[in-house]
Image 1 (tube, helix red, strand yellow):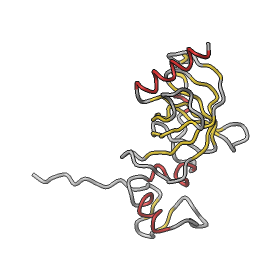
Image 2: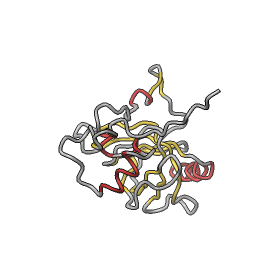
Image 3: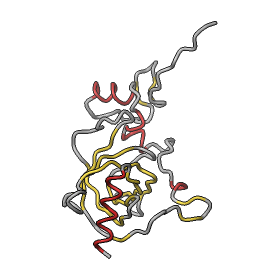
Image 4: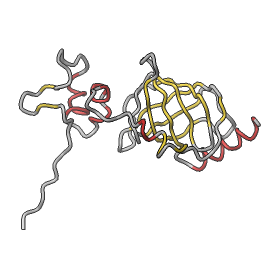
Length: 181
């Protein structure tokens, strides 16, 4: 019996024969060797900006905001604006870039937060965030999973819903929210 060979997943828009990206007609103007290794022929292609912005990719999971017309929120949210920095993480948990992105909270609950950012975030991707000013002595940084991301009307910003991924963050946000009531 023959063993089934495991095929390495590469970007569906990378042409192996022609060695070109089929998304970009004008070419890619970035450090090519690194980009090709990480995104085009690597397993992290779903984090490539060209891939994310392509019409064929299904990264905006707006239908996941609500299921069957019902609200999915499990805890009440309060409107609050807090600046934070975040770094997108690969599936393996490594930072995708060394430079953090900037976002602001629109609202906050013990389970997660709604963000405004210039970055398109992929459904179920992970981010490491850090508030510019701590919400409390125990809450400055954390890990969150992107649950949805939609463009705003001006297409220069995105709103994203993220859920916290540790009990420590959830408890710290709960304490902060109770202190604000």
